[in-house]
Length: 263
Ligand code: NAP
Ligand code: GCO
Image (tube, rainbow, N blue to C red; front, side, top):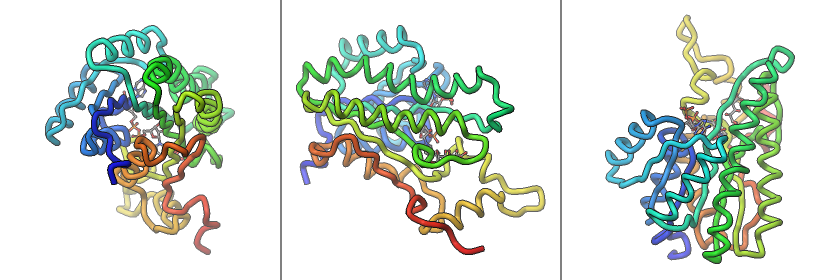
């Protein structure tokens, strides 16, 4: 079982003050890794450090916008000087804007692409040289069901996550020879702040229609929890996956396999 251990590893999880990134980083700590995270402002970083401390986890937190290459380069240089070379990178930071495509401004479209696709490129580009020197590395990109499917109002997000799937496969192709494995996790519908608007209780006390829709489309008949993603993430971050490369592991309760319950 040692192959699943992250003992002695240094892991950077982007956008991990809360949500999926926080759950993954916390699980990495329990598996033995040193945890580093960034978020977009000091208030969020402080909130994250407090939350990790409440779990008994010493986490290193930094303010860094993943879309800003100068900030990212400074972050990686600081980490390598103060803590050590990164063994595991999880590109988790992400946003979504739910707007019908023809109503969406180019600025809004570009912003989602910038955070969800350019960000992982920028951070991976900064981290890979250290992994090459170290002789190994793990990159995990948090993709989405929208890497495979579309739906109304999420054109920018689906385009970004579709691109992130292919960026994952390309990093795997280009850097596999340096013993770097790059894989994706494709969460289904997970109950986090990002999907809270889709689960809001209606004024009459009934479930949000989208909530009921997702339940009918998911064989597991439930929304995922951020904890559902931690075991798959540990697998992809550990030696247990050293010959797994360019794979998108969908953690979705079976939603991508299922036509949906007959109404
Ligand atoms: P979340 O609750 O919105 O958390 C995203 C985190 O990323 C927040 O801390 C956010 O900070 C941070 N962030 C946003 N822009 C950033 C930037 N430019 N630089 C650094 N950090 C930034 O989202 P989540 O539900 O945990 O999702 C995490 C990842 O999983 C995302 O990539 C998302 O697309 C993906 N995902 C989520 C689901 C789901 O159902 N929840 C399913 C599939 C995939 P702010 O608070 O300032 O925005
Ligand atoms: C939406 C949701 C989804 C989830 C996730 C599904 O509006 O459809 O936010 O996009 O976040 O990406 O895998």
